[in-house]
Length: 210
Image 1: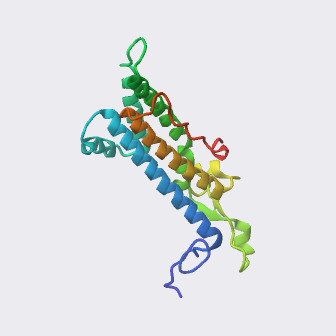
Image 2: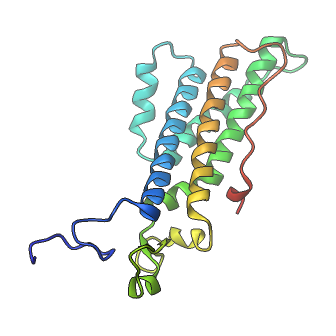
Image 3: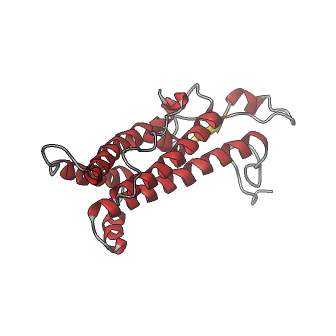
């Protein structure tokens, strides 16, 4: 018995991936997957905007930057540099498409930054279960998983009082929508757009506004 693994959650042999634990683990997994998809798509935008034909070179630059925020910052810096080259006077259709895409890249940079705290909370917060239910645990009732901002990352404080599973599912869905929006932006950079129409920006879920 002494050689069996100890688990903080109060179970020997590891956390039981059922009930509340299974739901929580799945939602965190969705967040990580969708966020990685989003940043891969942002890297594609960086490639298209650079004008470099072979993506091997732009991906080498992109992946040399060790933080997500740093990657987003160089994308915005590149977009802003293009804005400085905007010609005076009326624009032709291709120019309108291109510079509209540039504006959307700047918006995308700022928008991803606004929701990044939720992603950081999902991946860096220490999680514990409700203390009272640890004491009074019943066979058919697993305690809820809650952020432990006292013993872990202070990022967990922003998640206190929230419906964690709903928040993380909304974040994953929205991250994926932003990833798809990156594909639209790439098309417009390449001037594959249809006239002066552009897909609507994804709408941030209300639960991610605070």
